[in-house]
Length: 340
Image 1 (cartoon, one colour):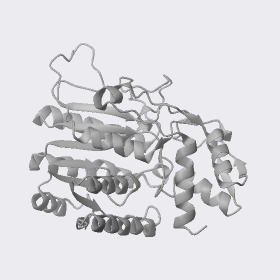
Image 2: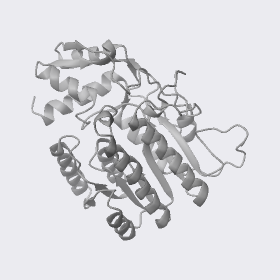
Image 3: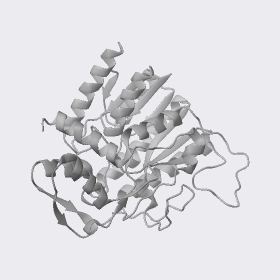
Image 4: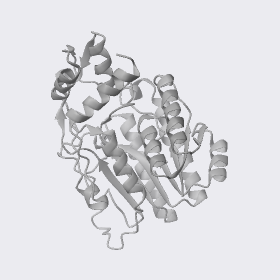
């Protein structure tokens, strides 16, 4: 079985590639090493993957390529002949979408379309792709359920992720093509992204600098540890969606379909306030943060809270790492990696 991961030098892609190698999968990875954040961190992840592969007497199968290079992407698919594709390559971040909207259109819409079309032409068995909790947008129903409407996004990033889900459904419907979308909820852990709050807060506290706290700290997030995410993804890729012959067209369910199509929340289902999260971080580091309270940023969702009932039913697994455990693991990695 050949598994292809797009965005393998990214945070989630790196961890997924690493775990699949440990589980003896035949893994291939694509990444364009984009400079949205520090390239050296991405290159360090690739180097770490080389080390992991060598331990298991495998070769790192990595191709530096952009999913917007359609001709090259077609050639890659033909040469690799993947069985399963896990599409994680995307332009991330809500706030950056206010600054560079065109990049989200190019990567998250055109790039996504290129990848799913290659999957269709290659007759792959299962297409799994990253969506986001951001799609819930203006939804005020807590916790967020996959059956909730997600037609009112509050950021361009969220709109592109909702669009991905719609495109995937079309392919599932037209071509009987199994697709599964994963709505990730604030993923954190070792090797995390520098634009994420935990990374920025840790760096600032250790350097004695202030941290920016938006909405005056009145925010709640369903922080989800990376190991729980990877366990969920691996269980999901091995369980293909099938046509739901009992699906009712009179009461459409956004999370499933008459086509082989599924959507799942990947969250901890135990949300924490941002201030509690910072308190735990201060305790782990052993140093108080200098706090700079600010108004909320445009496009930000105030509360996220994942209902993971459907995920538990589907794969018999529920994310479970506490923020105390997860934050300590991240800080331990950060101190080691940056020599603090």
